[in-house]
Image (cartoon, rainbow, N blue to C red; front, side):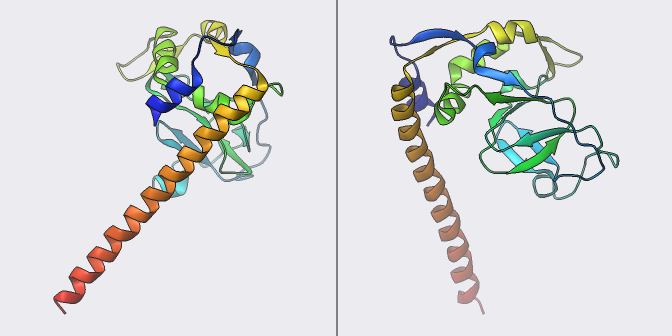
Length: 197
């Protein structure tokens, strides 16, 4: 899937636009404890924290957590270089640790297209270049000024819509195939259990 996204998303057509003009940082914080469901942004996507870890691991006092709304971009400055940047297309509203950065996508861009290019191998390579060695090998510090200066070749809005919709269709089919595969595995296990009853 990432290879297809890479091919569809990068072409010679389009205008070089800085990431700082595409992603607009939004800082909205919770004002009371447990105001919203706590989310975890990971390399694999955004999840409800209690489901992802099978428990709540957020601090007991989550006042001041950052609010994430539908269609926001969430990233971990320490783990961006590994691909911890996600488009929230699942949750109407939630909250993440204050260490995360939350952005909206500027109105002149098609959100599914932008969300796809942010996860390409080329983008990950660039994130690594603007992330400096931190306290450990795994955690790196994102240089926000350099991050905002990264450029992406962005085609016309109509072309963004065409490419974004193709990627959405492919992703939907992949998700459906994964669900069918999981259901078949469960059915196989059930049949095997019935054989030995």
